[in-house]
Amino acid sequence: MGAEGDDNVNSASISQDIEAVNHGLSTPIRQDPVIEKLPKTLASSYSDEQLQGMRVALGDRIWGKHFIDNRGTFAFPFILWRFYYVFLLGQNHRSYTRREKHASMLMLSVLF
Image (cartoon, rainbow, N blue to C red; front, side, top):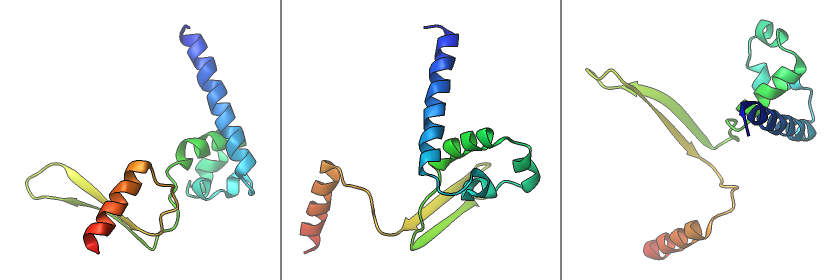
């Protein structure tokens, strides 16, 4: 498959993602929390379809509310790099993998 075929596949995948997000949205795209973070002048320069594409691209980065959500950056003296940290604490709503279940049972048995 050539580059044109790859573009068609990617376009179809993005369109499917947009449709999936639209189906799950109960509010108009311009009232979406991700889109509302854009400056109003910038958001108004995009069509609804373009905003929906941005929502799909950025949507996975939205995190639920956590009991503790602490994020920041820091730098060491004489090192040119900056580092970031994220500390989240809250109820886990994911389903556990078999490995995670075994590790959890092992840690629980060690503690008690």
